Amino acid sequence: MPPPLMPLVVRDLTYVAGGKAILDGVSLRLETGARTVILGPNGAGKSVLLRLCHGLLEPTAGHIRWGGLDPATARSRQSMVFQRPVLLRRSVAANIEHVLKVKGVARAHRLPMVTEALAGAGLASLARQPARTLSGGEQQRLAIARARVTAPDVLLLDEPTSSLDPDATRAVEELIRAIEAAGTKIIMTTHDLGQARRLADEVLFLNRGRLLEHSAAAEFFRRPRDPLAARFLSGSLLT
Image (tube, rainbow, N blue to C red):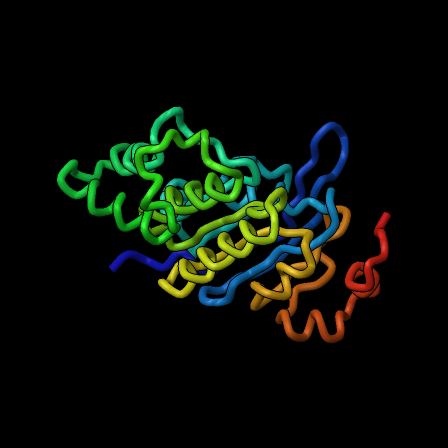
């Protein structure tokens, strides 16, 4: 049995770009199970934190540990979906099959895996359609289905519904819940308070590159400990 990927332990994480600290001394520990929502205003450093944890950026200082695994092994057991998904100039089905081919899945096993992934995302009827002609919500569901098909231990989602209408947002959120229910740890960013209330089991609240609060979602939304978090929940603009 492979060693566990969790917990994720971050210590004194700092990231500087252009002379500005995007993240400033962030420390946290995430366990398996709970849906983790990284919440905060635009520019808080949410997306950068996610990219650092996935190994797409190198920290300026501090460290990130996934269950004691080496970085390459840890990254191979995660998938990440970006705010604006990048899809191949191929059919919907071929986008998913390509990932399986790259991962070395035998040809005979790919078709049933593609079929199952599309059905789970509500895209079975669009399998032969060019991926880039899908609606925004369909493209995001395809990107999530493509990330899910290799059964990652952790799925990282960066503002997955930021530009979607309410119906498309609901469909994506239902897919996220289904993936979590199947055993994948969800870590996602959002600045949407409604979405955080619907999806979060625990909340990390970031502002200006600093982690100001980490608490259970029910506690955070009922009575946040940090004054800036309370202002954010009240709808005040944080500067």
